[in-house]
Image (cartoon, rainbow, N blue to C red; front, side, top):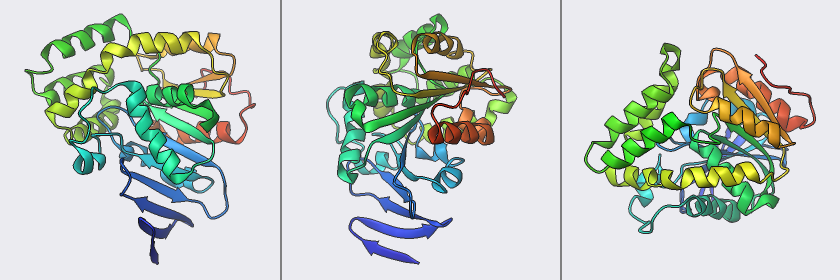
Amino acid sequence: MGLAFGFGTKIKLFGYYLVKMKNSMLYYKTYKHSSSNEWVVFIHGAGGSSSIWHKQIREFGQEYNLLLIDLRGHGKSASSIRNIWKEEYTFPAVTKDIIEVLDHLQLPPAHVMGVSLGTVLARQLAEMEPQRVKSLILAGAITRLTFTSQILVTLGNTFKSVVPYMWLYSLFAWIIMPRRHHAESRNLFINEAKRLCQKEFIRWFKLTKDINPLLKFFKEKDLSIPTLYVMGEEDIMFLEQVKKIVKEHKLSILNIVKACGHVVNVEQPEIFNRLALQFIKNQQIPLIGFSE
């Protein structure tokens, strides 16, 4: 039974409440728990949408309040605010979009979860407003661009204005997620990216010029926020760099999931959900890496 109020509709689902809000600058959904005061914020990656978290909603919603956001130009934010931003995109600017939603909802400090490029935004949020972040859960984390990924970025920047963006995006998706059992993640990313227009793809791709200096800064600065990295052992582009950063940041933990690629929460959702939920419940548990 739904009850209309404020800007949205309140619906009871799986024993907790979904409040779907559309009138903020970004499209977002909140799943309200009937008794918990804890919040988990989900941030997707470039070219995706909040639908990337569909295998997390039921389990996490049984214990926590959830906030899922579609980033500017992505998912359902694409149709409502496609042309609203004229300035050049930067990581702080895109993160401010997220902060506006948090302010609007008056969200208390939360556990922030990101996947792929969303992990960079989650870390940027922790950098800009650390008081908002209780912990970080980073899936398929990007902590440094390898030589191979830098070549891909250079090629992409060279041809982004002349080659159809879906060609480039599909190529990158196949390189990052090449194996047969990566197909679900790969296809999900490619299908979601079709909602982007060429102009929006170019705006986001231009962000890549800032990513290595930003990631170098993140590596050098330990925020002392409990952080769980969950990486697939087949994530050939990003795993080795995560191993290095975990050695330097004292409150960081790494779990490596076997037979899994870049998008861990989609390819191995049962393992990912268990690790992330356990981490949120007790951040002092000895999740010593290389498990599963």
